[in-house]
Amino acid sequence: MVKFLIILPHFKEVRVDKVACEKSLELLIADFRKTLDNHEELLKSFCRHGVQLEGWLKGELLYFLDNERKQKIIIDFDREVALGKEIGKVDLRLTLSAPSGFTDAWIELKYWLIGHQRGSSYNASFYFGDPTSVGISIDAGKLLRIPNGLRYILVLAVANPSSDDWSTGVEKFNSKFSPLHLTSITDPEDFPESYFLGLLNVASTRKEKLI
Image 1 (spheres, rainbow, N blue to C red):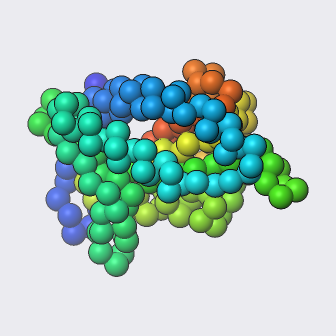
Image 2 (cartoon, one colour):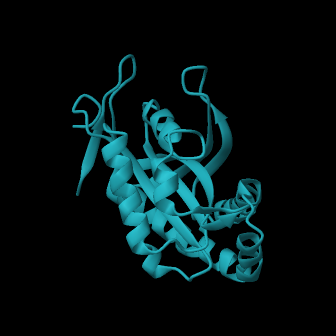
C-alpha cells in the first residue's frame, strides 16, 4: 500500500491513505456517471452551443453528494471551503472513510468545452497548457498549499477529448508546470463520446513536499 507523507512548514505531518481514497473517489465517479448519463442529451446540447457551464456541474454535484452522505457512502462534504488568504477557497472537501479513520480529499472543479466556440477550437491539450484560470495550473498550485489530505482536480469535459488528447495534455502540463505533477485516475476510453469525467491527482516532484 502506497502512503504519502506530506510535509509543509508550520503544520503537523499527516499520513494519508492514497490508495483507499482513490478507490472511494472512483466509486463516487461511477455513481455520478449515472446522473450524467441521464443528462447526455443536455450535455450534447451544451457542446453544440459552445458554452462553459461550471455552475451547472457544481449544482448537480451538490445534489448528488447530499444523497451520498445520507446513504453514508461519504462521511461528509463541504463546498467553497475558505482556507485563509494564502490559499483562498477550495471548491469541495470530501471526508472519506479510510483504514486510519477518515481522509479529506480536496477537489477543484473544472468544466471544459471540447469542440468549437465562436470560431475557436478547444481540446484537452489546450486547457492543460494554459497558464491562466482557463487552465488548471493555478488550481493545482493552490491545492498543494493545503497541508492535510489529498488533492484532486475533477474535470467535466464536454465532449469526450479522447485518450490520446488527454494523455498528451497531462504530459504537456507536467513538463510545462513542473514541479507540479498530475496523474490521471480516469481514462476517456471508459466514457461515452458526449462527456468525460477526468479525475487528476495533484502532487509535486519536489522531495520536500512529497516523500
